[in-house]
Every structure is written in C-alpha cells, then in structure tokens.
Length: 445
Image (cartoon, rainbow, N blue to C red):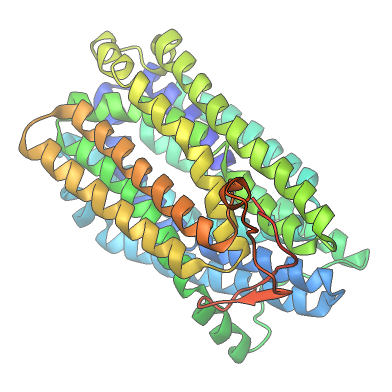
C-alpha cells in the first residue's frame, strides 16, 4: 500500500503547487505505469504462497529457490517493460490524453518513472520473502522509512523547486530503489540467521519455467483486475481536462482506501496454509473475516471524510471541488463492499482456485468496459464513469462470493441451512498448480 500512499501525497502536492493540466496528465500516465507493474503482482503472491508452504515443511532451500527465481523474473520483466515504455509510451498516452499539453506532461512523467519498474516489481517479491518468514513488521518498517524519504523529496522537488510531474517521477525512481536496497540488506541479514536466502539468480531453467507456467491464472486475474481500474481512469481522462483533473485529485485517495483491504489477501495466504488443526484454522479464519469486513466499512468512512471534508487539500482549484464531492457516495458504496470481495477472494486463493478468480475478474472487466463506453457515448461525465466502477465491484462481489460458496462457504450459509460446508482434503491442487493446505470441514473465511 506504500506506493499508493505516495501517489496520494504526490497528487496532493501537484494539486496545490502545479497547474491543473499537470494534475490531469498524472491520470493517464499513472494508468499506464500501474498496468505495467501490476501485471506481475501475481509473481509476489505466487512466491509468498510457495515460500510459506515450503517453510511450513521446514524446507528452507525450496523457499529460497522460489523467491530467488521470482526476483530474477521480476527484475527482467521490469527492465524489458521499461525499455518498451521508453519507445512506445508516448503513443499509448496519445490515445488517453485530451490535449497536446496534457500529453506532453504525461509523456515526461512516464518516461522518467518507467526506470523505477525493475525495482517496483522486485519490491513485491522482497515483501513476499519477509512475509513468508512472518517478518511483516520489518517489511512495513522498511517501506515506511522509504516513504518518509520520498515524501520529503517530493516536497522539495514539487513544492519548493516547482518541478511538477517530473519531480514526482524522479522521486518515485529514487524511493523505489532505496526501498529495494533496504529490503535486500534485510533479507541477507535473515539469511545469515538461518532464514530464506534471497538472490537475483534463478535456481534453474526448469524452476523458472514451472514458475511462469503456474503464474498464468494468477497473472490473468491481476491483469484483468488492473485493466478494469485502468478502464475507469482512461474513461475519466477522455471526458475532458477538467473531469480528468477532478478524477485524478480523488483517485489516489480511493486507491489508498481500497488498499486497506489488500493485506487481507497476503495474510490469508501466509497464515491459513500453516494452520495445523481445524480449531486453529477456524480461529484464524474468523479473525481474517471480521477484519476484512471492518476494513471495508472503515475505508468507506475514511473516503467520505476526505472527499467531503478535505476537498481543498486535494486540489487548490475550486472548479474541481463540486465534481469531487459529487462522487463521495458512489465511492463509499464501492469501498464498503470491497471488504466482502477481498474476504471471498482470499478463500479462492487459499484453495488454489485461480481459474475461478480470473473468470470473475474477466466478468468485472467486461462490466467496466460496457459501463464506461455507455458513459462516454451518452456524455454522462464523471457520474457515469464512477457508476461503472460501482457496477464493476458489484459483479466482483457476487462472482467471488458465489464461487467461494461452492469451495468453502465463506459466510456459513451451509451451516445456517443445516448442512456441513468446507473441503475435506488435506491439500487442494487445482488448475493454477498452487497447492494449499486444506483440512477438515467448516468455512475457512
């Protein structure tokens, strides 16, 4: 969630210290960058799942091979994508920008920030390495240190030197490599103490091929999920400069609030597979379920307070304030049900149901595309775009919960109907090739 919080900070600084056109340009440029990074989010999730399972079996060598291979793949993917964005990023942005001036600022931002891609993807894997060893606090502390440095640098480059989007992009590059260096140093320290050994060398070509093969369904799921959000931002950018600026002013706040639920997915993958008894598994699942629901409602509350009470902090341009406040209710409803979606999605990942999860995300993407196309065709403006966001999330909630019901009955409906739910296998290996700890009956999440 640290990158999303940094995006919120840089958006606030640009909204107060840069022209409105630069704030608007941040929307399409961030969209392209986000898609490039999150296309390989599944790499970190896969590494976390496999490393956690290996550590539970006390096989540190297998865990080390898993995370090292994932790190090498991630850095290579980041380097290739960086070069591709340098060559083709301008052409992609030309399809999303409402004016030549907006395109110039967006292109400058993307070409600078693209150099952070190898580090950004590697940070995902390093986080997974720490979490698999239950060193979440250390990983968080390292990212918070990096965030503090990035905020200070942003304040200087944007607030004092007036570098605008170029200063924001430069800060992202420096902060991502700084965080990566700290995490690699921490991983080496853990390895010396007998923990997982992290390196940038693949264990073998066969291990790399197996990792990529098993990554398929997870990658489809994360790419389609990211594309759905990118569709929303792209549609907002195409509704005009003012709408694009208003959307960008509030979008990072929405993303940060939605990411309050994101740790639930990692926590589910970390703790549930290591539960040794049904009782322990049910206690962990109960805590995760309650936390996910609470975070969804809490995120909706934070979003509403910021959108209605601190609009002037998001941007100094008063012409954008009514547009921002107008989406408070829709954003709150979307965030409120996000917690339910994350809870059910966690069940699918724990049970290795990557194919089902990917199918739900494809349906959500189709909903976002259809909704935004209608919003643009009928000139519904930002209300139409954000209405598409809510519709997309409703499809996700229904899809993940319906799928999870047949896997593990996350809300205890079978028990309510007097039937016993859950799965009765010791382990479940499914189409995405991920093996998860199973256990006795009863709902897991």
